[in-house]
Structures are given as C-alpha cells and as structure tokens.
Amino acid sequence: MTGYSFSTPVWDGGTWVTPAVAEVAVARNVNGPEDQPRKQDAPAGWDKIDWRAHEGQVRRLRQRIFMAAQEQDWPRVRNLQKLMLRSRSNTLVSVRQVTQRNAGRKTAGIDGEVALTPEARADVAVRVHQSISSWRPRAVRRVYIPKASNRAKLRPLGIPVILDRCHQNRVKNALEPEWEARFEPRSYGFRPGRGCHDAIAAIYNVCKGPTASRVWALDADLASALDPWSYCSFADCAG
Image: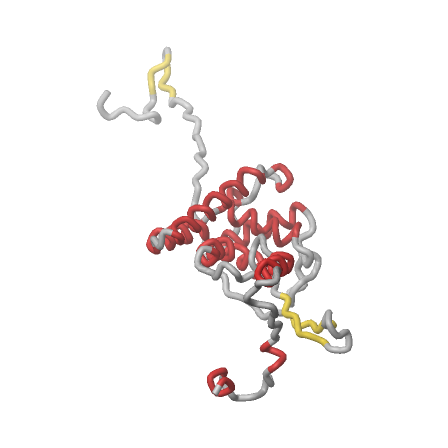
C-alpha cells in the first residue's frame, strides 16, 4: 500500500486507531580506544582456560619459526614472528609464565604491582594484549644481591614491572626459535634445554682417553677481568 507506515491510523470498527508499535532497542558494538581493555578480550575464567591448547599453538608456531630459520627462508621467518607477536595464545602463555611459574612472580617492579589471583592475572592478560603495539618499557627497580661465589660482594639486579616481563616473554617466544637455529652447536649458556651438565659432558667427551687432542679447558670471566671503567676496547686489549 503506497504511503502506508506503521504510524498510519487504521479503521477499527467505528473509530480510527493508531497502532501501537513496540520499539526494539538494538545494542551496537562501538569501537573504543585501542588502549582500553574490552570485555570480549577478557578470558572467561583464568582457571577454566584450556592451557594445553594454547601452549600447543605456541609450540607449533615456534617449531615453524625454527624450521623456516633452518631453511634460511627469512621472509617466512619474519611473517611467522609477526604472527607470534599478534597471537592471543602467546599472550596468555606469557602472562601465565610470568605470574604463575617464574620464581620472581611475587617480586614487584617500580609500580609495586603483582598478579597473584586469577582475576588479577586475567586483567594483566587483557592489558598486555591491548598494548601490543603501544606499550613503552618502564624503568627497572635496582636491587643489589650477594654474589654466589663471594657473599661479601654485591651484584646489581634490575627488576622490570610485570607488564614489561610479559611483553619480554612474548618477544622471546618469537625470537628464540630463530636464533636457536643459528647459534653455535656448542653454546650452552642461557639456552633452552641446555645447562652446565651438557657443557661438562661435552668437555669430558673431548678430553677423555689417552689419545685426546685436548687435555685442558679454559674458564674465563671477561666481565670481571676487564675494568668496567676503562675506555679500552677489546681490539686495544688484544693488541
């Protein structure tokens, strides 16, 4: 019917009646600022997260980065690393590692913030994922602890804030597989799955037997051997 609308009066028996139209309010999803946590980004329940699935996704992506680096397919490595940095599973696994598994989870940075409850960890995960492209590192809290070799001496220790540690773990998951494929095979310090026992075993296998070509091992601490306030370079010292 031309010109008819839902507010046009209709003839009902002996009178004109305006039909009652129920207004339906539609909830709209409005994009807010990117640095504000959104409700849909929050985990439904920290303790109900399927951690095996998220850790499996991170592990498979790390394996793909490692294999691409072995094949020296650098464009593919960069694309996979960008995918890792955008991964929500990587964010959740990193926050869990920092706030639940690390020995320093109860130690706060300069902001005094820790996350020891499921609600606090979920909030940290939302903030970390929202600040992927906008986060700026903050200053570390300087603490001096005794050295293991000499308890009379102190060594400085820098403690980052909790969000910095989460972002560092995210970036580590993206960079570590590439450099594991490029490092020297006999490097054992600060590498995953390796420790001092592996170095001891390598030295023993090289030096054992009466016909061993190498019968000694050199243990050097270059940072302690050089004066930290000296201005000479390694080239000058070597010459």
